[in-house]
Image (cartoon, rainbow, N blue to C red; front, side):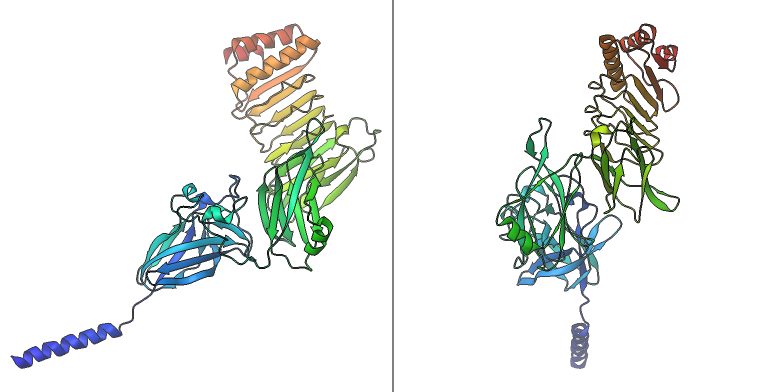
Length: 476
């Protein structure tokens, strides 16, 4: 019996020794950025982090820090950003700080700490508890908030947990001329570039703004400012030269007026190309404009010598482009954008002499502002995404063509007819033309009886041509 018990003890000790020698397999943790919280601080979704952006994070367990401000490269998947898998001993941990920075450690996003001013803006502030299981990859989601226009103490960090030893800054004031011809502070989209790398990107409010980055003294940096209806501003500088010039004062920029388009050109016939046409009816009138095609290419045009041909540009790569036309804009009288030249946004504000506009067979915003184009006589929009149009300020408009329009609003159509009829009756505008055709080739509508009556008056009293026939509108 004793031999049997001793045998059991020896077997138990042997099994225990084997278990002690069997190594524990580590697990892995990946930190996943919640895509819903990835915006630039102004509500605009950010689709790309800057090249070289990294995660800096601190992780603790019950014994204290496991690693502090450890830097991890960021991986991009189809629809999210994640860290590389981190091997860790199985157990319970908590994430106590999380900051996304540029390659030079300028903060872009951070996760607020519980109890901080910004903690309520997310569901799970720091610290975030997580567990690592043996031989398993665990994903932990992290919510972030843009650091643009925020103080580090608002996140519960003082300062942000990164090195600021080489950070320098300058202040910026940006102005435009308002409708009263006075200078007014304006909001603007700002970028700071080093070659092809974007070091800084922010939507700046209409106030004094501080731009901070980590410069090398001998490198040339380029500041780019973009705003609809204004010429793109660029300024290349070395930081020490700029500081010497400013002598503690803000860099003050006044943006020039421009006709602007934001586009992402389609890939057609092996190229990314955008084209449009603008001219003046009297080529003897002297005037010059400059097209900034948004990729560093500038095109100078003498409108008296080269007034009427199509302007086109081929881009080397895909992407969103901000095109601005500046100069003697008031002499431009005709504009057409046609056939697969997509428009994400457009500003016609400074084309004050525009008489004829045609935008056909391409992607557009749901509405285009023509309220500043008070000399407009003819407007044609066909096969676009426009659903409404305000013509209340266009008192000279006598030719309106809305052709094959998808989902054009009946309310907008009734208001357009009221405006056109009011202008015709007040100014005795004769022989106008209205074409109102929906995507199926029938009349846009349904129209109110009052609108149909006004169309009858335009046709019978003022000699306007109405297409399609009024009978079709009445039966629609």
